[in-house]
Amino acid sequence: MKIIAPRIRTAQFLATVSITALLSTFQSGCATNTTSISKGSIGVQADLANPPKLINDPSDPKKLAWDRPSAFGPVQTEQQISGQKICGKLGKDIVPLGYNPKALDANGAAIKGGGFLCHLKQT
Image (tube, rainbow, N blue to C red; front, side):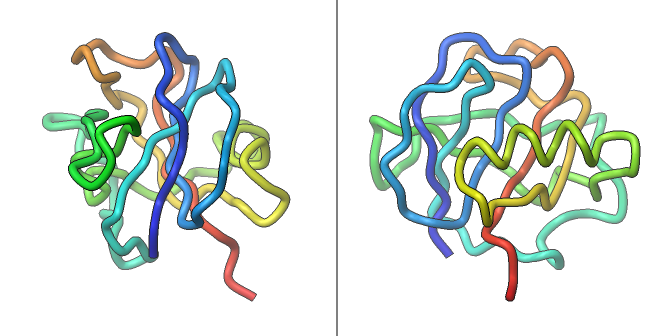
C-alpha cells in the first residue's frame, strides 16, 4: 500500500493515506510513506514515549512520511470526528486508521492536536 501527501510547514493534524494521488497543500497537512499499512500495523495504544515523526520519504524526497506508523494507536471515539474531517480532505474513501496525540512534525516539534494515520477504506 502506498501512502501519500504533500509537504507542510505548520499543521494542526498530519495524516498519511494509502493511495497514490496528487494532493494540494492543506492547512492540516499530510505525509508520504511507501510502507504497507494495515490495522495490524498500529499499536494497541499510541507510543507516547517515542511518538511518530515526519521525515523525508526515501522514495521521493519531495514528500513527507511517518517514520514509525506502528507508534500510532487506534482512533478513539473522541478523535473519530476530527480524524474523519482531516482524512476526508484527502478523498471520500480515506479514513483514520491511527492516532498519536504527541506526533512530531518534520522539525521534531509536537503537532498541536496530534497526528492521524489515514488509509483507504476497505470495501
